[in-house]
Image (cartoon, one colour):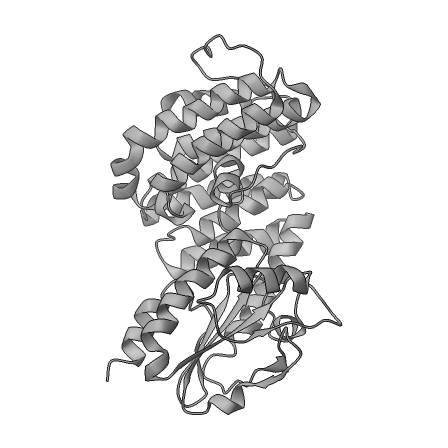
Length: 373
């Protein structure tokens, strides 16, 4: 599965990592505050509370550069003393949100659940106790969400222990047989399969639970995503030519770059992580373009104006961007190649052969190897 689907449950943290404020989320969690009472506060406006929410999330982002870092026990230990107090500040904000109108009351329970799901990764006893209480809630959705957060915390803290991971999967499989329509369980096994499985077989077992034991909407989406990922991965070892039209209306074909190393990047300029990645690509382009690196970005923006503004604001991003004015949004090239994640990067060697369809995370290392001579 693509990493863009990673750690879906951690809504409080991942919303902050994306720099967004998810106002108006629907609630499926009870109103259960932090174990210690929140300090007395004068009633503030929703905007003021969300401004503080964004500030705290920015501080958390400075400690947790990506959700994947939370899978590293050493990194969790390094940041625990600084991250846990910040996360608990968000719980106090959740209490305050309860007094800030309908939108605040809707968001508060999801914020609590999301933050507690992150705190469990740090083995925070108060968060574990709160989730254990919710796991016994008469509302099945509330109980399932809490149970899944607890199980995922155990999975992460297992640090790749094969016996423990298989034991957890056996437990999840029994839950899936009892509740085959449970979308929270589908998300959980997806996370397990992508979060440091001890062996490839453990990953396959986790994803098999999602696709054979679970029948809900999320399980169907996971199955479709797996099929798309397999089709995309099948490109490796084969030649690939990219054709289309640039955002300025000029025809483009990567055939013009024969003998060059080519990065085919997929992005949404309106999405902050894509903008940040483009800036990192610009550094690599500066380093390797003179040695034979070319980049083409497949824009999946809804508006060519959004793309043009980004390029105008980011002068170091100088390579071609393909945009289909007749089919804005998910680009036809992305659909043809079964790319479903805007964080995808395909790497093509000098012979025109795809050597990776999941190159973004290790791009710097890939390029260092390709240009070693």
